[in-house]
Image 1 (cartoon, rainbow, N blue to C red):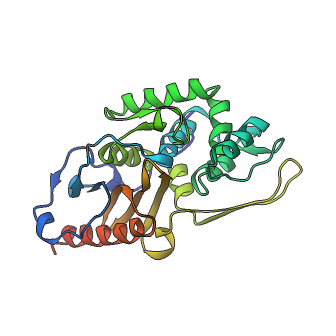
Image 2 (image 1 turned 60 degrees about the vertical axis):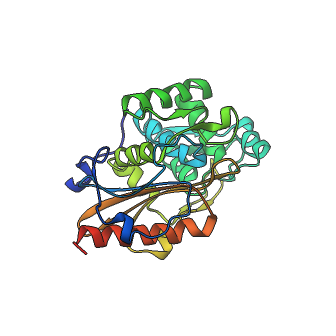
Length: 280
């Protein structure tokens, strides 16, 4: 069951899949070192594009789709018990975790924070197990959602973006921007990805948890909505970002970048888009 409401602002409802490129990009756009990049706003204006349709692994950006499917399939009040396999999956893979422990019982709402802020592969495992039910069935739902949303250059092989199996699948900068536009139309998703720190107090059924968002843009720039970071050796450092600029929502994607540079580049691209929107 879909649990989030639509964003009140109508600006995000504009067409973001097909747009008109900014004519000043070649002369004025900032240098972008990422292998692929794409920036578009809620009016459909494309502000930057670089190999935006190249199929590449996108690491933990996969978790955007994981959250999207969970919000359609479950209820935020559902309770999920963490299993040893959830914990082992993250540890065995050397993945980032939400530091969950076997036997803890957390709500789906809590696990969405554990999924999106510290990018917990253990949270991804628990959510997929519940809402597939099971990993394979959940991945099938992810791919069905991609097809339904018109993400024709996207394929998922797991709910966390880890390299196995199949290098974690593939996507493009354009498809990730399309998906993010749809995901941000859910108020719960938007609330989660915009949170810098989420503290879960200790209860009788789980430990206390403090999860910090890996998206450093939330600390360094104004008007940031989110969205998600990612990294594997194959994908490089990735970032999907969104911010409000001059009355529009700007969504950007950087794939195959360097760690710190992705955040500084994102700020420059947001400033550049704002200049273009305001007429410069």
